[in-house]
Length: 263
Length: 260
Ligand SMILES: Nc1ncnc2c1ncn2[C@@H]1O[C@H](COP(=O)(O)OP(=O)(O)O)[C@@H](O)[C@H]1O
Ligand SMILES: [Mg+2]
Picture (cartoon, rainbow over the protein chains, first blue to last red):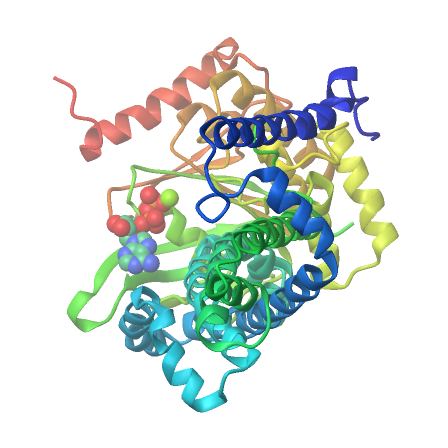
């Protein structure tokens, strides 16, 4: 069966998808620019978009390098969190006593603010990107663990009857049924995780790193360099956007069966 | 093509849970299902119909008694079987065809053979065009048809169905009943069909086993002597009304119905 023909509206939908947000952002920045100009707000209080956007262009190599450092920390911490949390979730769910014993601990660690251990990490690792990686790991780990556990619990027990009647081994049941069934939940956890990761990495770089956008913003702050701080803010938002986009793309690629959100 | 298996059960009972929470759910009952026979089990909710199906497939162990399938004692889940439950239990991350082909993937069967069989089942079950659609894109009736295709594609010797049409509307139900009957007439799998619909039991079966309230036992066996294929409107046969009345009166006598 071939895919149904897309209508003109569907084919041009992406234009609207890009055009509307762009227009909205441009409007906000325009308003900002106008208000600052009309009221003559000094640069050291609030820079104009034209100031910090120009600065972003001028200092693009520095900002890009720091953004890259931040991205590497996010990717490492997040990747490790996924690699540990998903198998651990399966192990916990598979062993009943483990689930009952560990669940309170997990709930406690999940609600505990992770950044408080930043100063301890500085003692352990010194002022280095390792602190940021570790904090990112902790911040994404729990949402991914908790949601993966829900995912592995989600399979209808009667579906096991069906797979057992097919003679499926435990591994086959996992590979063909439980893992794909859990995927939606795992992605839900990863999407929360990646938002927390960006939040966490910047805070970690404020307090304990010698690289990254958080570090750059903190240093700019000590020089009262408003333009660079706002450039850093824009760059951070862009990094967050890229990671979120990558997550959505991965979801679409790995879960092609997912129903469209507005269907 | 694999022909139907025989199912013989002697004095089987099922008690769920252990000492402190033991619950006697079924039996003792006997079953004598001949190869290729279509047998329905009808009874009030909670009488142990689903339990009987799980015991007959080896998915749950019996507490007492013994079961033989094709003369061999049943000790572990049988794989020469297709099962359909009331909920379709399709995998929502697989298309209709891929759901059916799960049988081939897990059992490691020859792909082209099973694919061909799946296609012919899609044809016979009026599922043409649904192959590449996901379960959420199908109607309830179509989902249940896909479940039936999944239960038959590997050519099992028996088909176990637990209220398979229970969640469907009356019109879909009548059609799917006929489509199942036509498939069965061609393949002569042994079918154990669980239902609480008198129409379905009489409309499909060679024999109807009527169960009492839980822990259920078989209180009556009714041989249905109607020509096949049976029509959409069963009331056409005066005998149908006779069989249906018989089941109603058993239920009344057992206190399943309390009409004033
Ligand atoms: N796994 C189980 N553990 C404990 N009790 C069960 C279990 N499965 C079924 N039962 C109980 O056994 C009785 C028979 O159940 P079931 O076979 O599902 O009945 P039916 O299908 O006829 O409605 C019910 O009272 C039910 O609550
Ligand atoms: Mg039942």
